[in-house]
Length: 244
Image 1: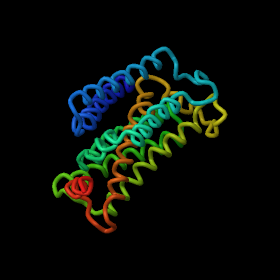
Image 2: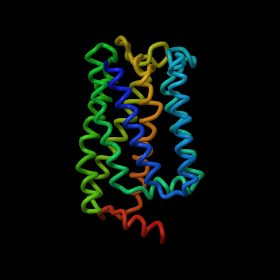
Image 3: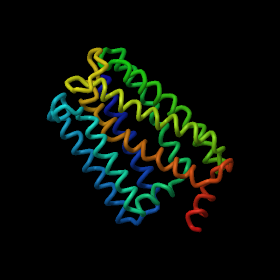
Image 4: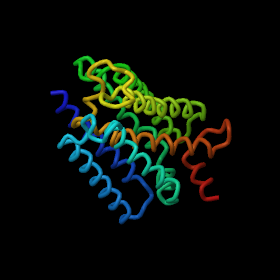
């Protein structure tokens, strides 16, 4: 039952995330369509591989397969950010409230705690990722509301929230890799490790959701850096700075 609920939740949140990131991006219609197609292809590849057991321990040698999928998408995003100015600008021009608010979906990290209680995920990964996502997701709601209603929010508040949310994701990936059975990195050996994260629908977390959330944190961090110290961060000020 939890897998079915997780699949429905995963699918709904992924559609919403892509609709926000791609739908609100300042890009041409052709580029928008291409982005949706690329996203659909990657989703199909991930779940297709998972359906035939391609993310099982040992499937990619000593490296945890879900972490490898995360790295493929994350590195692709960073490369595109570095060499493709229009890609970077599309992310940076997204409404600040959208960049923050999309992280509210991370409240779904409660599923990690439920999987832990069912004996399907081991600590420390399950508890760290679960509670970290819940805290980040809940905190994202008022922060995004401040950005949407007032158009600005204190630099220190956004910086603190953004740092916590990014570190939560980095810690989750690290702990997931160190808890994966069948690899040389298997330090946390409590059964069953992170085996559930190699199955449908949970493989979608490291292979799809985590890279998208990390990209939003990257965009927010750049936005923060582009403002003067102590200055409130506004969408209008950012646009003016980019145009200068």
